[in-house]
Length: 285
Image (tube, rainbow, N blue to C red; front, side, top):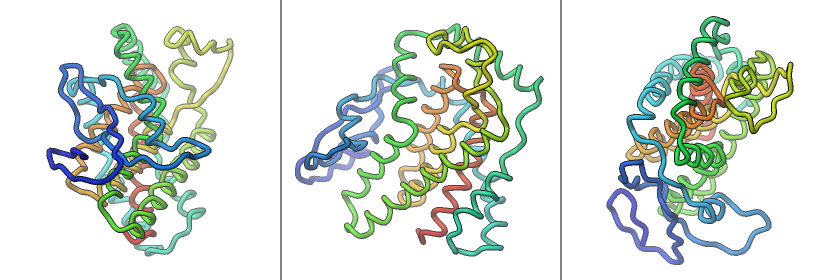
């Protein structure tokens, strides 16, 4: 049986995955079961997360601020995308869209603003716990794409195969485009990650003196998460709040372990929202 938001649906060969719980022990219902399949050369998202289930994640209080900052990018992205759609309609042109979307990413914060954001990371680092590091490590590992693929897998169990295949292709395209554009912008803007600026934040990274990268503006995790949330929420609006919660978990983990400052994450979220809007439009969802 597959339990999803309190509704129980039967289907064959269910492998129940451990679900994420907040520190106070409240179990989140959505990162759940998926049907097992035959052996594959490369394990998919379902198998990977089944092998390494999520530990207790961060509390709602922890993730509230960055979650709101991410949500606030939605209206901005929709307004910007309306201009693209007015000029290009529903025609797919990934190359032209990538160039346009990159131009919509705000210029990096000033040195003064980025220093202030770095101080926030430094203060947060002082509060780290073993449990928090475990949660952040899991979210960093699976938050780029596997979590979102697993969410879609759950949805695909309930719809016709052809529709499910189209939705899978759409999510895959959105995640790929998110990586491509965020990497291009990061290479252009060359904003070093917080742990590069202050190696004491992540001593295990062994950053060499004078290193400039890796670059962190905009965040690839944020871009991919936002693209996935926008896309998945349109397919299943009643689950949108759950997707937004998981996105906030992923984003907070990046602050917690000093992979990014807040500005990296909001810029990535704006970019990802644009990509999600684009993929929904050109794929006809």
